[in-house]
Length: 229
Image (cartoon, rainbow, N blue to C red; front, side, top):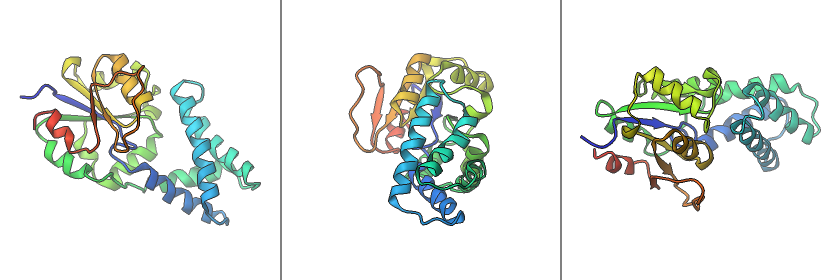
């Protein structure tokens, strides 16, 4: 029996290839409204979206704000008068179909399933995240799946971790491990809640000395070693 009995997985950038999904959904959306998709639009959108999600982690904006504001700002920046609400919903519809997985995800889940309990804790929009779990075929591996847009709390706030533990009927923090690619939400949230953390860092980014990390991995397959499976 390994040290851990419950693994909390982040979704985007950990299980899902979010960069690929975002690019595909954005290209479909931009083409649908009659514009030519290019690197300038992609870069501008990512800048706007990133700032909004950072603000969300800090409790400064809501999911509802993000749904509209990222396209209001983008369309304004490229001088287009398409309705940002409609454009935002169109984008989410595409994103919900983009269940692209990071290499090694399915193999890892297959190797862990039935041997250790797995849950998901993700900052995201409810219907989009569920859509991608269904599109990728990995939803059944996890119980529970906790999405910030559904429960009204977000990482790194410890409230979302408390919700997951309550829904899981689980109490032993010493046997729980959060796995994610974000220092500011996954690692910081796990540290604040008092559980071990595993930073998925495939690009070898530098650590933040102010955010303790229990484990660091470059490939998802390394998780099996950490949990002794």
